[in-house]
Image (tube, rainbow, N blue to C red; front, side):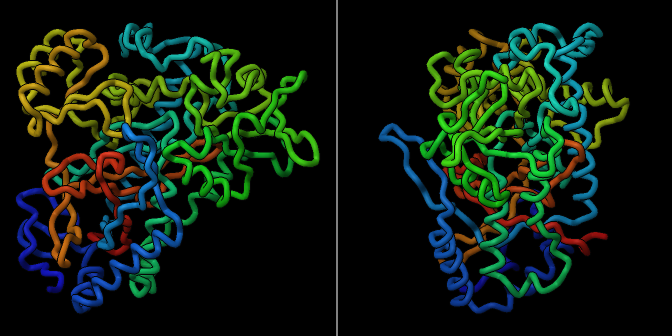
Length: 484
């Protein structure tokens, strides 16, 4: 059977393509009209073409299991998500505002700590943060920027507005999949790109290169930039190789780099040592330099922190930036924006309960069956409780964890996450919940991706979109003529 848009039912959720009365939203009209014109066998042919393209391009991700690591093909749905350009311009302005304030916040924490002294953010939240790095106190990174690459997770609630779910400021991943999603969709639905109303995403890698180049301590015509990877067993290794290739820079491991007696970083090449100016590191702080952090790390570079501290090399993101990548700090971001920028936040946070506060903790413990509980510093959907989908045993376990370490947990209402039509077996369309991770760059200039990585909960009714937890993905279209 062909795609049946008339019987498609979002079940009361805000749907990205279909409104509550069954009409198609303006940004999706061209897409839906085109898909309706395709016979069922052609839809299936396009779906198979997408799968073949993913295999051919080698787009994969790594899942960690008890049996070891497994490489899986990227799960992809051919029906894109559409967002109006007008709404996206406001969203992009909010993301720019947010990262600017967060960078001022991080810089303040490693210098004067005015925001703590003024009582805007409680001091104990920072002193108890496992991502605050005392080793970074007093360091001045280039341009005063600590988080150069940020992936901010957005969700749309029942009102259709975007809300910030969390900020990823350590080593955010996923942008390569955003770019590959577009490449796959252009192969599968090429006719739709003949018009100019779908805004492009292919400028990300050139903007990333320009951002990294702007950090160079040496004012040379062509600074030497490298991508530092933990190696082939890392779950994001596909992305590390992709970005290095697209930027035309070297992909290196810790053993490829050495810090000289002059405190400069050098790369081992067949022609000898070559000085490195900027390192886009995809390694967590604690593995970066065994002289300063984890002594047994074989992933990092001995002396790297010394080189960075003396301004001989730039690191993106800077060590210590993760102090603002804390879900407890997240609750204070609206106040952080007001404090540093004297502006009202353009984007709203999701309502958040801090378990460290006795009153809020009591409310959370009484309502575990209704809330989503998250640890402060986990990522990838791990270690969280989705109340409405949990058992009494799960709730009892989390109650114990919260009482033992209240600082480490926050809770949020279970959101009515927006849905989008997704192709399931026999070519049927069913609503699936999704989120969005745009990427923001800050160096000399600021840049926001046109859309971002849309992640989809492929299981019916599920709210967990992470690929490591069974989620999939879609291309994201920012459409210029929608809802203008």
